[in-house]
Length: 89
Image 1: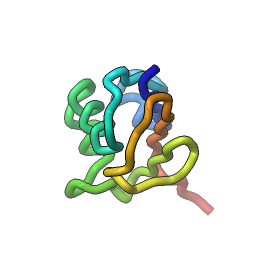
Image 2: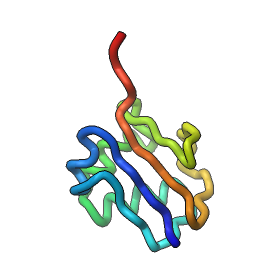
Image 3: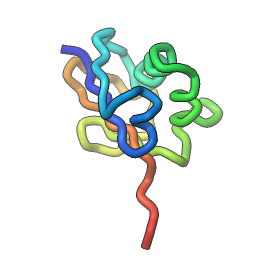
Image 4: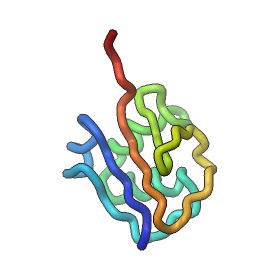
């Protein structure tokens, strides 16, 4: 089954579409980010991470819940969404 990773806004341009499937069964969220960087280039990890932690310029959801814990376990069938935070008033 793998892990589905979805992207919103300009992040879609980095991977060429709204979502990708990772069949590698990453163990942690950090592994997901690393795999995305390997597949789609370092600009992906540069957008998502800052100094090895989740950047202030993105929000990460795991199965609909916000997370900033890169060591959080990832299970087969999990859905990860990476998006820029909402701005406006």
